[in-house]
Amino acid sequence: MEAAIKTEEFLPLREPTFFILLSISNQKKHGYAILQDTESLSGGKIKLSNGTLYGALTRLLDQGLIERVPSDEPAASGKPRKAYQLTRTGASVLQAEIERLENLVRTARRHLPELTG
Image (cartoon, rainbow, N blue to C red; front, side, top):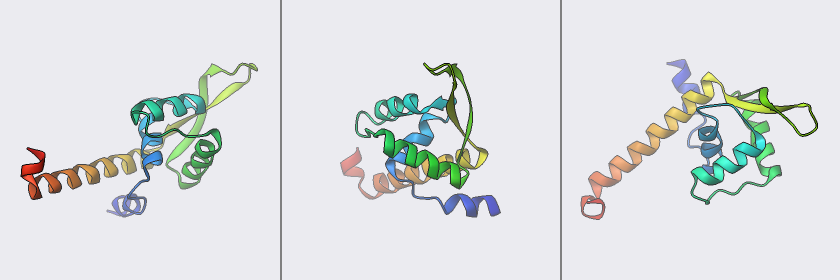
């Protein structure tokens, strides 16, 4: 029960945060890959600048929703890139947000069946 209470403290997620977490939900990614993926996943709606992305990544690291891990791809300089992946808490928060959004849609469809039919 305690984990659920902690998870709920993060909700609702802002759209950029949702897409960042979604981007790294199935594999670790470095910053540029996250930028590209969030734009693609959002149908072009979310276009993050480098500053916005890295500010969000820093916040998500501080909150314990993501963690920094070694990347499988070297950077152009030969140094390893920093990659990010979800923590267990981050995965729980993402799942809770998906469930929250699904519930909103179900409620809207029940309330307005003629508009969603």
